[in-house]
Image (cartoon, rainbow, N blue to C red; front, side):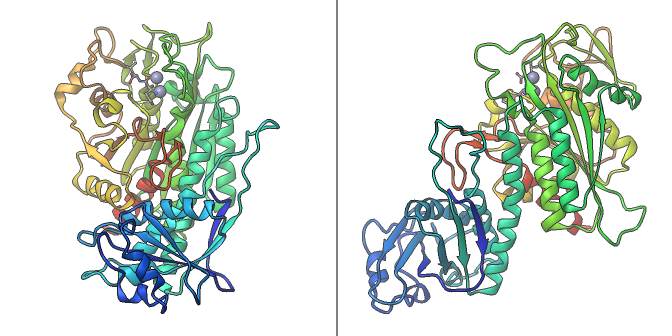
Length: 499
Ligand code: BES
Ligand code: ZN
Ligand code: ZN
């Protein structure tokens, strides 16, 4: 909708935005914006519902040239997160009206609440929404398309706490938008090597450390899953490690580790995807993209006082005479042997390497992995919740609370020895896909559990349902949602603060 969003700066805006709760008149502070009471009059009309998503345009006689009244939803139970969707509706209206400078006065309505949420949380949610709404991907439009003109939006706010929140929110959205841009990039451009280049660029820009292990060198480190899955593609697989270190920190401080499935394309391999199910598999890298987005937010906004390490397993699941086969057996770096029964269950093989590495090499305080792992989670939870597997109370609380706060919600599913049993192989330790289709997303989590050391807090998040949408949704447009970038960054902030 916009080219970018910036907060504050010199000058004044001729357009103001005020809020209205559902089924109510304007609160006195918001009404005071227009002494001639045009705004109040408009807010009393039938189409001024106050529902989230409603935006009304008013032309006062004096003062502001124009005032927008945005619906804030129910006063009862109001949560800052509603403002993300409010921002979406507002941004669409502003873009249509070609307005590039507004003063936000939603704090007036917020402070009228009985037990008002913090203004900075409200500003942050609104800033996130505006930032998310400003994402677009025009890079690949060619000569045959008229790309709509986009311009920067300036947002002002006289309330300091609200304005600080807005700035934070816009900065956090930048991480999600980075994730979305990477996700949207097609597989002939976004190869594993390209992903590694993007990580190096991020590291240069935000002072992270970055190292990459590619091709045959993966075998020197026993990263056999990534190597095997990627061996059919002329685009070499790789393993990327990013590290954030706070300035003052004990050498022995344990890092929080993020792990991302980064399949730059999933054709299914020899167990080829059929009937249109291959389309969209450029987005099989979205777990890794979310991790990269989260690292952006961690390095630029959250800056937690614990180290954070990101591990990306990057490969293209392709087909050639060198492709791995159903019936192959792979030995992993922790000694577990896996019989391949389906080359389309490749995500768990590349994730296994990164989880082993995390446990063996990083001495982690906790691990979160994010992956577009199974179609089954889409069937189970649709596009509403990501699947969450986590048996550690502290880590699970951090992830679930982060889900509520960011709107990137998770729903817990079980680990159980019975599911681990389902993965047993007749000739190796385990299979990568059990012969029965029952409980597929749980099978995926059970498989991964063979590569996580007991006692290390670990959360697995299956984002296959929530990583992309087909219709407008709040501040998001069809395409990648960036799911996971805000969730992981916020979960780390909460986990670090809970110590
Ligand atoms: N990348 C897919 C999962 C997926 C499905 C992601 C839909 C996004 C949208 C994964 O690698 C896969 O193919 N999983 C199979 C596993 C099966 C063959 C054991 C699945 O879930 O069907
Ligand atoms: Zn697959
Ligand atoms: Zn996949």
